[in-house]
Image (cartoon, rainbow, N blue to C red; front, top):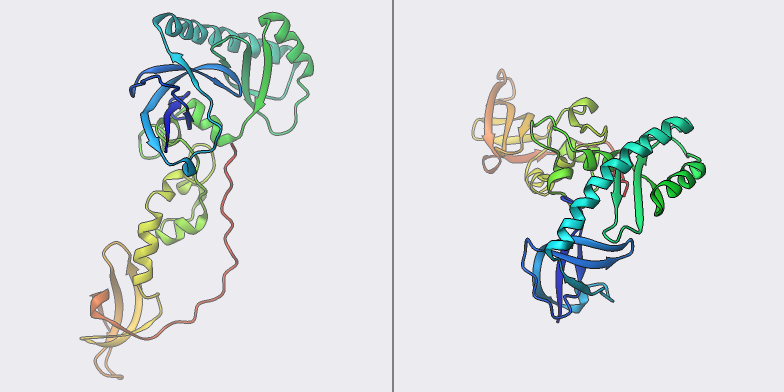
Length: 288
């Protein structure tokens, strides 16, 4: 077993594990740690916990200290400087007439590195921009191109549900989403209805996928011939959540069909409709 703490650096960012190195950290407190980007101040979202070494990628970097009032005050100053840096970078992008959309600016806690996030339809030659920004801020400048999902995560917004975007409020990682999920949930395949404000398939299609997969396995298919208490007939439609089918059945072969609704437990499939082979559906890949 090994002792770890979980720290997050953005509101809905990934959680990273660190070695507390004997320091007791409570959930909701702040800690100063060293990351690949430099010294940073992060929020503790998992207090000191012992876990199996097999579940952790080692070696873990150690927590330097619990954040003091001075550390938190410096972090607030960095936030103010980030806004100033964002405005200056916007101005310089316009001066250089670069085809890029600036999304966010971030300064590491130790004020060594200044990172600008942007989107663009293609590659951008920003070498001159980096030189100019480095001379202004006297820091190491990094321009990082991100995807549309990351842009939505950073900027936040309101989804079609009327609530703040999942990716910007609680989703730490993006999960692969495919059009197959919309089909299994009997949703409209109209892209405008199943896409988020980022233009990609909505992340919430993944939430109930496991339940729909389990329920769909218990349901027969539309077109199957079934036997019921009212006779045999053909399934016209199915209701996944209610686990019922709508069918046109006949008591006798020459009787006119009647429409009835039956529970899955009340029917027996006599003949399954042959399903056409479908091309495999490729899941959409999320940009990191």
